[in-house]
Every structure is written in structure tokens, then in C-alpha cells.
Length: 145
Image 1 (spheres, one colour):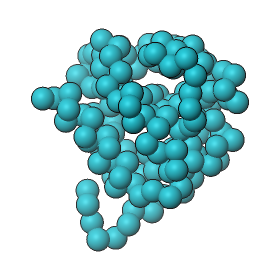
Image 2 (cartoon, rainbow, N blue to C red):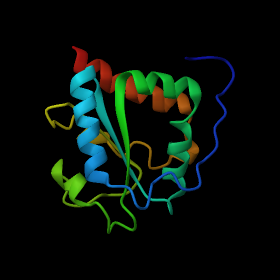
Image 3 (cartoon, helix red, strand yellow):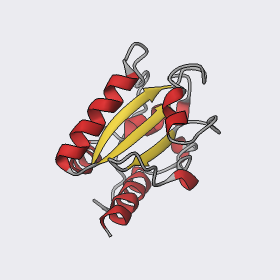
Image 4 (cartoon, helix red, strand yellow):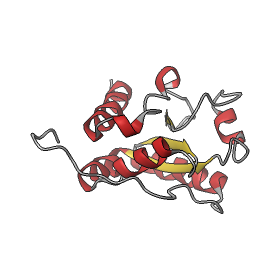
């Protein structure tokens, strides 16, 4: 996907559904991932966070979205003001979150594979979409080996 022209993206105003059933969406993602040989990508964030909104916008770039959909089951989880759906990151070993956005790459057996750098895009507004894609490719390739 590398090109000489930067990809255009726009932050999404409210990418994290306030009324979504996060647990049901996560379980559906696990079922689809097992069936299709994909990883699960949990995108933990809040609509108040400009970096979470920026990252959500990057993940909707058509060229990036096609690759993402082929390789990951992507679930956006609204954590509100760190007072909603916090049992979901706890399920993967997080007593609390250091910030958002947090991207958790997870195998279908529930193993978190990127714990040490899941906060890579807490400064998403200053980053390039190619960096996001490279990051996702890196974790997908590590699992394939």
C-alpha cells in the first residue's frame, strides 16, 4: 500500500457506539475469526479522545479497510470515561488502561499478542496511516510464523 502520496483520512466524530453490546460484539468477532482464520483487533477508546477518533478515521481509509477486513475481526469498544466495558480489557489481563486508544491483537484462543505495545497509537493524530497498517501487518505476520 505504500505510495508517494499520503492517504487522506478524517477523524470520526463518534466512532464508539454508546449503546453497543460490547460483549456480544466481541463474542461474534471470536466466532467469525475462528471460522475465517483471522485475528481479533479490539480498538478500545472513547468518543471524547481525539486520538481515538483519529485512529478510527484511519482504520476507515478504503485501502486500509480492505486489508484489515481480510486479516482481522475489528471490534470498537467504547470504554466511556474508563467506566464502561472495563471487564473486556480485564479479560485480557489489564487491571486498568494506561490510556486510549489501545489496540489489542488477540488470537482466537484468547491469547493477547501485543500487550507490550498496545498503546502505540495514543498519539494517532501525529501519526501516518501507513504506520497503522505496518503495525497491523507486523502482528499478523508474527502469528503466521
